[in-house]
Length: 77
Image 1 (tube, rainbow, N blue to C red):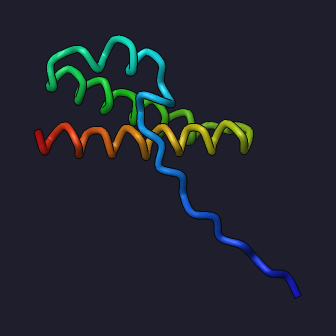
Image 2 (image 1 turned 30 degrees about the vertical axis):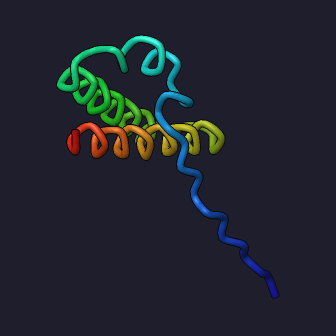
């Protein structure tokens, strides 16, 4: 019998995953930060819909999750 171990999803900030966001975009006005995050999510979802290696798909999912959390954080400001 197999035992499956469910790992907790890592919640990593977008600044840690995306150097451009951390160094440049995060200094822009909130609306532009949100627009960047939305475009990042769209690009990542498109790349996920294409055939990509599992390692890349995990990174893309992490980016989507981090960008979504960043949008929620920015909306609450």
